[in-house]
Length: 545
Image (cartoon, rainbow, N blue to C red; front, side, top):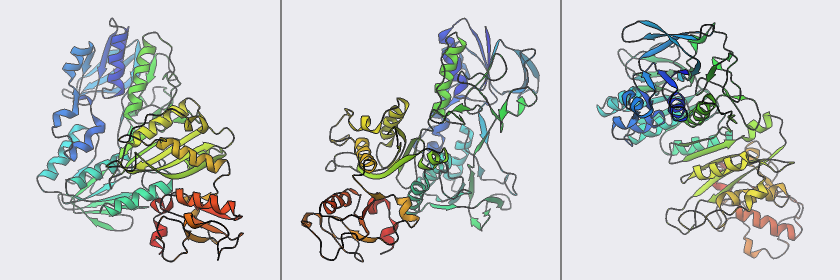
């Protein structure tokens, strides 16, 4: 069987390597447009920041090494330019010689990936305009930093790539601003309240997020001098464009393959609408496990998992790829890590789901252990079934652990009650006696079961707490313009507080406010609300003082 694979980075090389292990007799050939195959695309920003010191570390396998290890034939600098499904051939151009050759196949895997979107704007081809997709991109940017020509940079795009590049530029001493057309950074990945928290932390570190603006041009004679946005021109020595990617599928026009916005449609077996043609990786659509709808997941993890399953299918197994949950983690500017899986509150409501969410601040390990910090967590659950639907988590610690636990729970259809009582590992250097995710779940359950009445940060920002008197419930008074209630001194009716008065209870993280509410309820106070996340998350309440 002759299997032709178009693309040689993540999905293509994973499929080729696994297929040769499954069926060593299979004739596997990879055609790759670039010079490199199997490079560490997700590591490029960290080479820019000199976290990864040597550029050679970015190349996972050379074509020669990959061929020797797997037995697959690899042809680099060879670009597919036309597909002929009726003859089962692909035309490809040798980019070194210009020669066009025809490659036959029994099975075809399209894994051509995606390329950065570069807007057609004035000055976009000036020196020191960069993208971040190949090792050469990262090498060029770092060389420009090291030769001293970049002191101030604008990153266009507030997604993962843009923010990771921004963090690493800042680590190299570059003054950085991040612009994005969306109202908030990390659009569609985080809910607005969590995005806003990240933006504030970035600003605290001197990395300025500027949202709601578009990139309109680059100003300079030979190299970047200013970046023109829809609001103003910004001084800069460099512009890094990270405003999205587009699937490399233009060569498929007229082939009969079904696509949407240039992304190839596939079923759960990664089959296209044409026989013996598969698509995988950044050029292909998958499915969201929770909604069942098509989803685009241009992630290295998705490409590798799907590529491996596809290889087994081609070799004779019949294994479906269940799709994605929208899982992701990233190291952000401002010393924060972020993780998410499942549906955000915004996405769940857009699907018409009846949900409950809760924001909590929980310790990431025993509070007395050196280096302990906090997780800021938002959980989303279905109201009727109590099934977990999503998590968003921020912190300086291992947010990936919190995210991956939620991945497991959602994938297995676990209820929040089941998650709360799981036997998680505990020792002070690693966790808390009640695991952080179980702690966050317990807070959500208190809200779902009516044991805690609260306003979310979003509700507070939207003005739903108007008419409530803010009451400081922290261990020590921290809101000097508001009355203070000391939990341990509440032993009955409180002077100056009517039992039906609207009271918004605020502490540092939310826990002491909940305990105060519990005690006030016992003494007949019927109209109290806890501010979820306390002043740790709701920093604006401190600014109002």
